Length: 214
Ligand SMILES: C[S@@+](CC[C@H](N)C(=O)[O-])C[C@H]1O[C@@H](n2cnc3c(N)ncnc32)[C@H](O)[C@@H]1O
Image 1: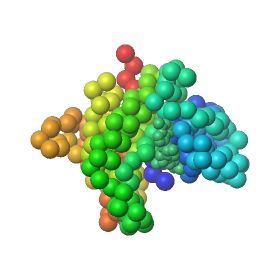
Image 2: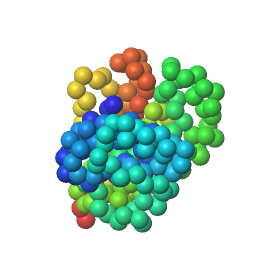
Image 3: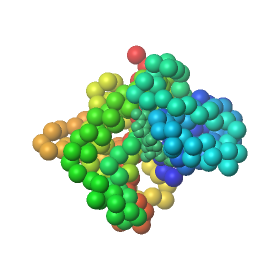
Image 4: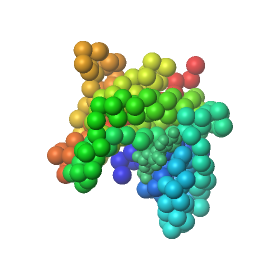
């Protein structure tokens, strides 16, 4: 999957996967790290943590610690210690419609507005948990700018730097730099939108950010 490829966790590092269950990206990152270093795999949902736990055991991921906490508090628990953070955020999931019609039935503007508040709070907590100079990926499987570029803009407003990246072999589109008459930071163009028709996949949004040392 693309978000771990963009985050690129290295052997020996300390990684936070803030919304980790059921663990598809945790297990991918564990292998990328050659099972060295540590991943703190956090989620708030006990039932989804069961799936996370069994996937981690099934895949033999010896460098993963499971944590159950509301991700909005994570920086208060750990402080600013992580080399890299993945926030694969809960979202309205409109990018999954070609796989599940249910996503479209569930989608409405109220859901987007409600979930974007949670996403922004999770993103701020994830950013705070990074070491100065550390890298963070924010990703969703949806297209609503309120859940994507506007969340990233809230981090830019706190001093985050948006980092340019490419995903070899994948066609992508630039992130939006304007929405409903509101101008966003030009660097939001470095974030990537992956539309289903581009690569015959589900839809995704990915941003790579650096915590600028103060
Ligand atoms: C898109 S899913 C994550 C998928 C996962 N990264 C994977 O690749 O398997 C979003 C997750 O966010 C979790 N979540 C929702 N609210 C949360 C919160 N306040 N703190 C931590 N996790 C939360 C949900 O339980 C869900 O498992």
